[in-house]
Length: 253
Image 1 (cartoon, rainbow, N blue to C red):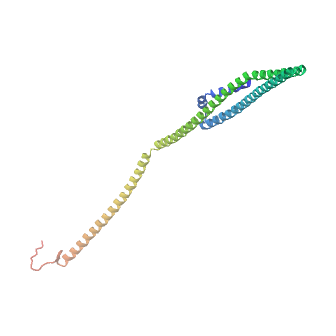
Image 2: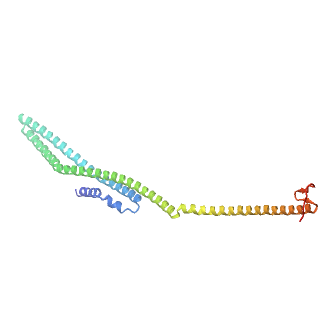
Image 3: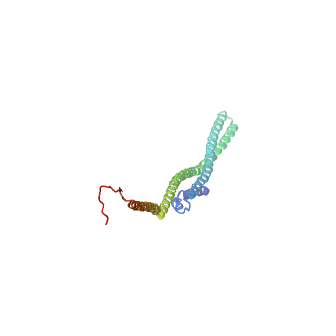
């Protein structure tokens, strides 16, 4: 009986276990939750073994009780048969055999009483064991419900942990982006390109200036050539525009 009570106490303690407190102390939620599921599953297996032993003992006691009842019934039939046979001998005037079968009937009745007494003495224990087995089954059912609850919460918490980890990773990425500030990088590249464009424009301007100088030099050279040509024409008696028309009077001061 003490063993059965200890089993009940253990199941009660397991079913009253504060799962929330255990989860709060978990360092790695997924690993701790998996370990909790394994431990609780093992506890249920141990409880099932203990309950199976208790039920087995109860079934043996019930079988012995049923055997005592059958034995008492059998001895009762034997007592009736011996008593009837004694009456037959007594009716026939055979007192010796009548006494003999009366004695047999008494022995049978004694055996019947012993069997009935044995059966009656076992009945309170059997009833108590039945109550204990019912309590153990209820406790085991509660443990299975707790295990289902634990598994469900494990799955939910692991999913939440993964979601939090993903969010943390995104936040870290966003933080790094904020620190780097990609717009500042674009501004830096834009400034570099503007400088390169300025350099190209400067070179183009220099090339344009050089070309203008060349044309200016060419124009100056052309003027010199024209001056020389006109000077030669004057010396030859020609106007800068060609031959001096003979019909015109030209006065030289």
